[in-house]
Image (tube, rainbow, N blue to C red; front, side, top):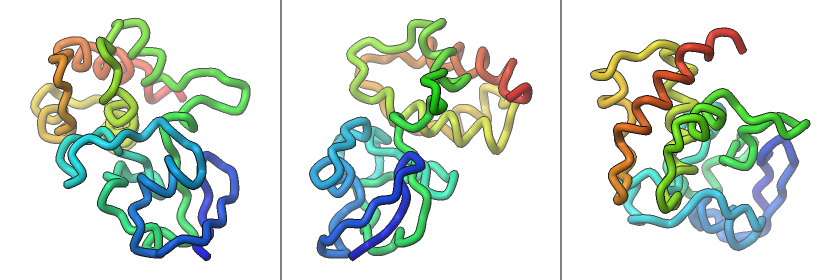
Amino acid sequence: MVAFTVNETPANVSVDPSKPLLWVLREDLGILGPKYGCGVAQCGACRVLIDGVSTPSCVMPVGSIAGASIVTVEGLADAQGNLSIVQQAWIEEQVPQCGFCQPGFLIAVTDLLRQNPNPTDAEIDAAITNICRCGTYPRIRRAIHRAAGTISQS
């Protein structure tokens, strides 16, 4: 049994502790925001916040996160359904095209702005290594800068 919190809800799963967190979230808990992309922690589609840090869930054994607090894209909005600053910026800049990679980007950017509330383009490039096959990178950058303009007010 592995116990942790997902989006502020306690979770207890009885699975092989080597099972990747991504599959526990999707198969055992029905949380479908994190996506399977590459399976080797390179594309970013599976990113979740583990104790506040953006982490690829496809290679994270669930046994290693016992007691941790996990936040998926579904948990970025507050309890009343108000979108996070990053989610709102994504909408205002019309970032998604197909949308497959966007949950991972939202997680990675949330962590980036927690660490660096006003990143430069070079800092964005260094921190956000997720892959978007649709090529929405210019919109992603604009959304990050938009969110950075208000992130310190939250």
